[in-house]
Length: 272
Image (tube, rainbow, N blue to C red):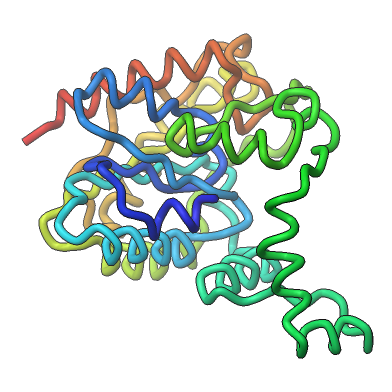
């Protein structure tokens, strides 16, 4: 859905891009109402990286020349310390961008189906036409694959995290070394006339040490420099109360409403 949205004709002047915290922590529709400008959320997965996000930015700029005025890059500190993306997800994204099928089955049956074009019909057409129930919390919240896709379209690319899980992971956040080079490559994908704004999404207050807000500010300053960003969202909170989170990396619905309001006010505050 996000690949197709990036290469379709759009009205959005403001595009959100980043990992799953960008996808699920911000309501594009609420943000558009607050800013009085059309907004599209192209957030995807934390298993990708800035190079992958740059591909979506280029697709949007190619499909909508001169439209993009503000690119808001948002990532969770968990993703910022990831040394490299997961190859499977990168290959899947590249296959989608190239109108290819991701090959995971190398049997003779699948090889013949590929030669005859049957696998392309199955994966690109039939899979979109037949309703497939989603599993777990996503199934309970969104229903079928088509329901999820319709929700993304209706909400301008934003989702809400459906699962509530205990906080887990390592709270010692830092910027991964490879992020510097990837940041410069991402900057090269930003079209002329577009302002790049960067922010780090929040974590639960009870999950991190009391000095984390200072670490968050230092990480954001350094990352902003690597990106040669036009503005950094230093006014956004590093933490929010635990009650506003569904899991360590994603806000719940009440948290999304609060964070989107704060994001809107910060974007207005740093407008040139």
